[in-house]
Image (cartoon, rainbow, N blue to C red; front, side, top):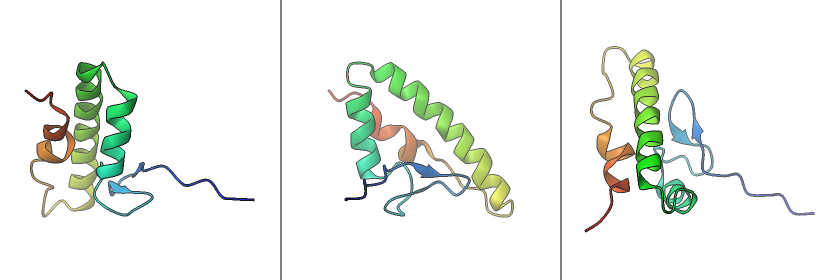
Length: 83
């Protein structure tokens, strides 16, 4: 019996990937999201914007003396339409 691979999902409130430990969304999570939202880039950006706000809140609470900074590149810039 084989064990199913865990998906690349965020561990809240630290926002690291549950599977690979990289900052979420990691490369694999980004690929999965692009496939899931194929043909609906606006929906993907709205979803990611909501997660960005949630992550900023969580990370600020975890470390109030050093806020997380701008998370736009991490959550949104990579998902913009090309061209």
